[in-house]
Amino acid sequence: MTLALILSLLSVLTLQYLPLFNLSDEFNYLVVLSAIFLFAFSISPAYYLPMSIFSIEYGGPHSATLVCLIDAFGFAASAIFAFIGGRLADSAGGWSSFMNMLILISAVGIISVWAFMHAEYKASTMTKTL
Image 1 (cartoon, rainbow, N blue to C red):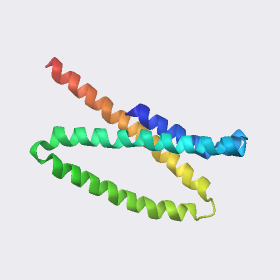
Image 2 (image 1 turned 90 degrees about the vertical axis):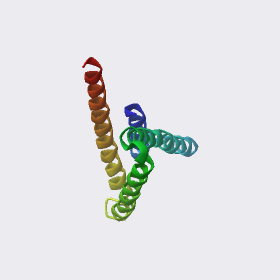
Image 3 (image 1 turned 135 degrees about the horizontal axis):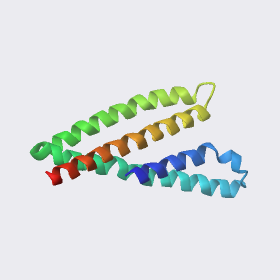
Image 4 (image 1 turned 120 degrees about the vertical axis):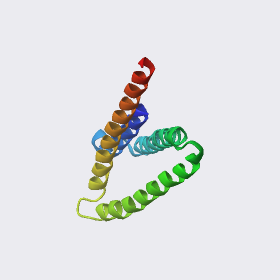
């Protein structure tokens, strides 16, 4: 999962710093399409797989309810982000500020997922040794 999030961060970094590459318009278009596809391709499993595994493992017979609650909080966060991100994109910094915010969120996400997965791995190895 951490590798998928790293790929998503690399795609956002590519989009942010694309003007520095001085590519032709045609190649620039292909790079943008590839970066957006890579972002969508890598962010989806990083969200859905851990959430589903967590819900099944800890929710037991109520895992569907837990998935619904997690999705509801995710959609609420997405709605809040739409307002904040839209306001930030319309501000003086424009899309550059928006992309920097995405880079920051992606980096925090990588660290959070890595810490969670590492803690889960350590907990599972400790349970096996007991």
